[in-house]
Image 1 (tube, rainbow over the protein chains, first blue to last red):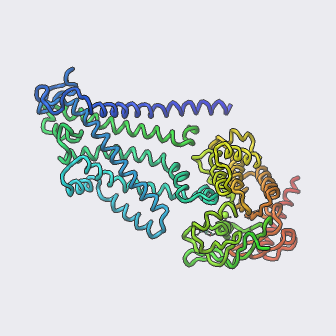
Image 2 (image 1 turned 120 degrees about the vertical axis):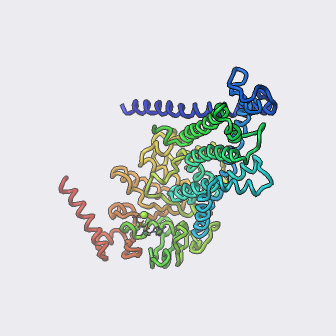
Image 3 (image 1 turned 90 degrees about the vertical axis):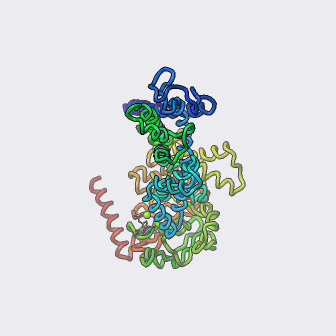
Length: 285
Length: 269
Ligand SMILES: Nc1ncnc2c1ncn2[C@@H]1O[C@H](COP(=O)(O)OP(=O)(O)OP(=O)(O)O)[C@@H](O)[C@H]1O
Ligand SMILES: [Mg+2]
């Protein structure tokens, strides 16, 4: 009898998991395909006038045109590529720096750990956007790269603090001592035990950071610190649409929907990935 | 003959607080020594110190000779080759003694691989797997093929403890330290694990440092016993002597408690 309940539970777990995972994968996959496609093709030349100004949505211009008559759908497609670049760039930078510092702090002597922890707390208290603005402003000009680096560094503090706490908890476990006894070096302990154990939680946090990075870049662009069209991010499109939001609301709604759907998709995907990475969740649910 | 583990005047302190003091004892090769004491008396710390794994916040002074190597003041690089080969540990809590995210076969295999590398033996996947399965078999785990591929949460507490013992054995230690290996288990499983440890120690000619707060459990497993209280040794001697004529009040209370328990059992029988 308990045998059959276990089977039912695991089938249900599978259903639930595939639900979030599938929807997330579809949304993100679609955006990746669209983003890659813009490298070779867009419905219209995004830098040229292709219709009337502020045209409504039609079968030709799926999201209408902007105030210069450029096809908005093409611009939004390009925005997809930019958002994905910003998100991945920021979590790679934030992840690499953050995980390294977090692990160092977890292994460090008490004094160094205290210093690192205090430094991280200060960095976290600093608003991401302000930090990014400072970095962007102090570099030659607003470019996508400076925005990615700035957001990545701001995110690294949060990743570092989480990594430190998670790693410390894992390091206090008996199986770490047992592994050390069998002669595993500290690096081996990190690779075999610490990273796999903190990875599920870290992954969800990184996905959150991905979404926040996309939003942070959109905010920077909205403030005028992003690249102008044709290589504009969604934030920049929102800014451009601001003046005409009452006459042509689609100009703001369409990039907004694209932005929100990507952030939701990434988070659903991460939730699904975490369940896959954690064997206790895999069979318990 | 030099002892396998020789601890002399060991003191462990954190800042100004003394946790263990004046601790001296030794274990000869193949000898079985019991360490009894109430919770918090410093048993686990002594075990960790004996293998050079004291937490950084704690300071040790005195002398700990493990297989002829001084551990007090030694750096990590000197300790790594000693660990496992000289001594290995089985812990109290089977749930935290295994990595929840690694299959049993992989965890035991990792220890096997490290030992094989040190010995210059074959480290290909097939021979490691064969050795792991043989170890799982030696600790009397049923259905070794399934357990090899199981996650820790998929097997019972007793089976986990057996897997942890297999991991310790994979190191081929000269001294096995068992830190309350049966406290978290029910009485039947407890007896089985004790019998298993006794058999393995005999078969492999290992020395045993057996830690417990349970006098009867220790008495059936070791030859000689140390009694600790508040970080100090208060009594030491052959098991039979300590049991028959406990000198220290704390030991006396332990013996009385154990007797009372036995009497209660007899009365209900
Ligand atoms: N990392 C540490 N830092 C400071 N104090 C510690 C640390 N680890 C242990 N202690 C203290 O050292 C004392 C001895 O601890 P130990 O774990 O050796 O007890 P024990 O005899 O094994 O007890 P139990 O039977 O409950 O396992 C305790 O008072 C404990 O609070
Ligand atoms: Mg203990």
